[in-house]
Image 1 (tube, helix red, strand yellow):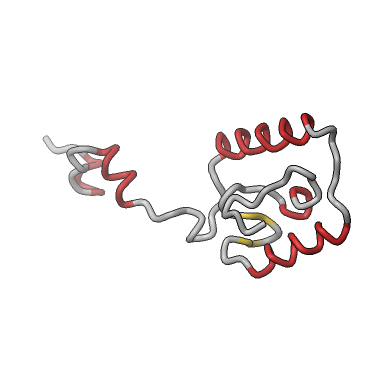
Image 2 (cartoon, rainbow, N blue to C red):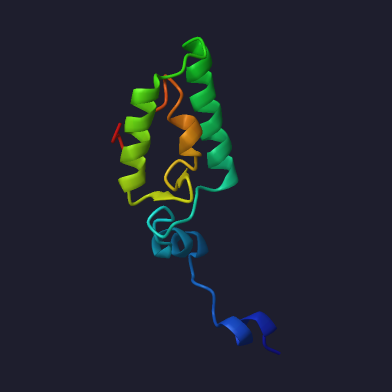
Length: 104
């Protein structure tokens, strides 16, 4: 008796974990934000650094400069960075905000 899943999808790879991680394209390159656990980690790291700096915000000129750089970036889609997952209109205002690709 054969397995229905195997009939429908074929044989699974011998090392499923290796197959998943080696064949998956870079999610940022295809326009997908990070998974939820990464978003939570990034939010925690950014807000912790911002709190330690006293919740300071950048001046409007610096915020505009950062957003202009984001607007030209290949990883910027729908107001979000597909590398870190942040909404850049907010992150650009943080005094401690940093581009994950070190563009600003």
